Each structure stands twice: as C-alpha cells, then as structure tokens.
Image (spheres, rainbow, N blue to C red):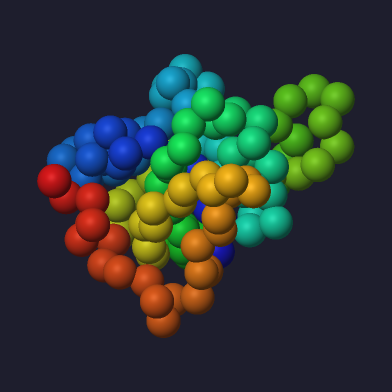
Length: 128
C-alpha cells in the first residue's frame, strides 16, 4: 500500500468526478505531472513539511495494483535522495482502499491505525 495526504474538499471533488486529480497541496496532476504519494514511514514527515498549518487532513490508502497508471519510486526534487512513490496519471476512486481522518494532537500527528480491520467504507465519513 501507498499513501496520499489529501484535503477534505479535494477528496469530495474526486468522489463527484470519479477520480482524484490533485498532485499535492494546491497543485493538480496536470500542473505537476504526477500525484505525490508516500510510504507509511514517510507520511508524518510529509505532513510536517507541507501541511504544518493545518490540524486535520485525510489519509488515502491506495492499492497500487488498482491504480492503472505507472507508479515510479523516485526523488521528489533534484538533490533529494529519499525515494517517494509517484502516480503518473489520475487516481481512480476504486483504487483507494480507505480514507481516514488524520488529526494533529499536542505532540504531533496522530497516525490512524493502518490495519484494514478498523477501516470505514471509503466515502462513509466524508460524503457530506
């Protein structure tokens, strides 16, 4: 599984159109060329670096076998050695295995249980 940090409004839009088209915060797939993703070990660091002014995010758990587009592990920028999974195409809604509310507590981001046994339906808590 790979993970993508999403904003609530972006996920609601994706549910309406059937695919997720945001690359990263405030930038679309068309603008960047791929969708930024992370491994479970990388997500907290990404949240700290790029979403530090927010207290609530969504965490999309993605099944790479259902994506349909090429996924390449590569550096996110020149000079960075750490590799991140990048999806080179739209993310189909049915490739998202779970969507979890992710909140920042007093000591940092509180990671949700990543086990599927406690996972709600993909859209259940977010279909306002």
